[in-house]
Length: 152
Ligand code: HEC
Image (spheres, rainbow, N blue to C red):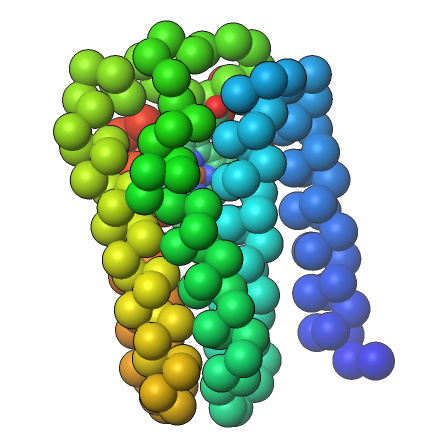
């Protein structure tokens, strides 16, 4: 095994530990949405790692991830944020409910871009096209987290 591979494996282990801590003590709807976000994160990581380590697109992997992410996005995601659900240890910002229209729009965008990524994979698109779609999906994570997630 190369040093680079070993570093990647160690890194993946660290990420898993971090997620377990973040979840600590969460219950109910807060736990449900943290679990959904973690699942979204795992799917993104799978595609990201494929793009980083493989010269070719694995269309089945990308299609599966795109479909899974889309399933967690849109209304499925916003339904996990009932008004005022700020129980510890949530990182959700109260701004979600004062700027609900924008929050919901970004969630819909995540769904649309994830479905675009799946469609590209189904069409046998090349790595550059898939990477472009992946970048758009990732952009919605960043936009939403910057506006609506507070690090605690
Ligand atoms: C529409 C808004 C929105 C989008 C889009 C979004 N997130 Fe999140 N995400 C949140 C919020 C809000 C939280 C904090 C939830 C809480 O702690 O109650 C969060 C939390 C997380 C967490 C931490 C979960 C935990 O266990 O505490 C991860 C990981 C995550 N998001 C990954 C992603 C990834 C990857 C994407 C993009 C593919 C994404 N998110 C897109 C709003 C969003």
